[in-house]
Length: 170
Image (cartoon, rainbow, N blue to C red; front, side, top):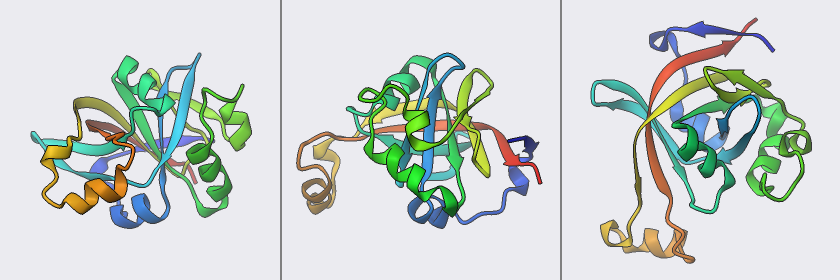
């Protein structure tokens, strides 16, 4: 798949639909080793005068190791035809299979020292700026803690500058 870089100001999408309904793949690593995971929680906005993507990764997710080691990651959005692959990437750990990419029927796409998903329609290349573990004492609505964290495996929030936007070439 070929991509073209576009200006972030020309990006037209509904982040609520893109993230929560269509889902996204968070990918990190390099040309040699990478991992990807499905996510449906996150956000896009402005912080510190920068275009920021916010993603949430549980501590046990294998992709977290790659994000922490590299300080960069990508967010890839795929069309509905890849729903099965998104399900695989959300339920199969790269620690447990020989080749998660093959298992999902996807391919890594090297970009700027990290990896994205070659089959994506849209890729955001991100450089981490801040991360923090969510803490139970910070919940203003305790039912969110009880409902989403029965194992107390609190997400790590990553705020990352969107440094490049790639769109599938037509």
